[in-house]
Length: 197
Length: 142
Image 1 (cartoon, rainbow over the protein chains, first blue to last red):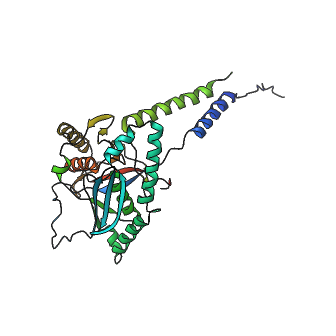
Image 2: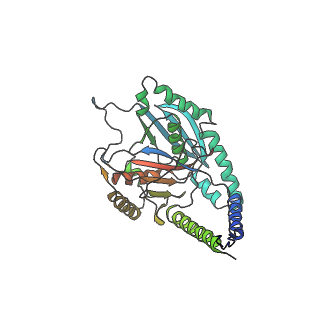
Image 3: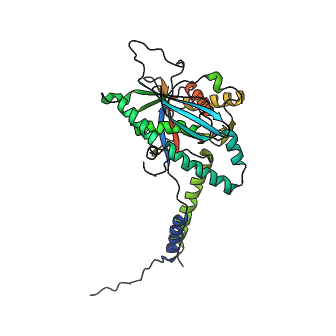
């Protein structure tokens, strides 16, 4: 005996969902590519530590020092980068008054100048492009040769108050490139940094 | 016409955009980030991470609030208090004698180092030792 079964046709209307999905795809295709925001790591001095820690017998002083000293010359800031006291390179960037002028310019002109400055920075500060920064990485690597533990040695970074931050970050970048793990900032002179403008 | 699936997708979209806008508004201020080819991708940041933005002129922004320049005595006091409050909210590591607080500094490429040093010094006062700095990776590699 055959049983009659109701064979109701079931169908799902996908039209509207496909519409929205296509809109989404178009949105993500047209969206300007976002530059990847990455990060670099460093350590701060412990509270109460003096500006230059006195060497003790049981606590040998750190081996590597990177110093940055800036000098403002008109519209330019010249920053000397030294590794263990020896000059590695001098980088030039725009001074604060020059930047103030640029930021007052119409947006198109400002964008153009900042893009030029960025290309200039890349040429001077990116180890993949700049021979001087590559030299710094090599010097750090050579100084660490002898023991694999040397890459765990503290690298003490000192910078004067007027060094542009991008140069400080370029040094952290070079340290990361040389695979040093303990990049530390020395304690700054509190009176100088907290002095009013 | 069956509108169920379209309504589903639209609600998801609305939820996504609301969440993204809220987070970015509160934490991040527009700064001209420096470039670093060895910068690592910022993956799985802790929920209690504090992002400190430092603008070109040295103003410090934390969680949507402008504290002003950190070398101004009033601003310094406020930032110091803010950092201490954040540091108290996370465990203290007895071994390293430092707070486990994670801080990400987003400083403008053109800001003078002194303002970053002020923030660093105030973080040292709050027993924070480990810092991360934001940078654009021009190659996009991690």
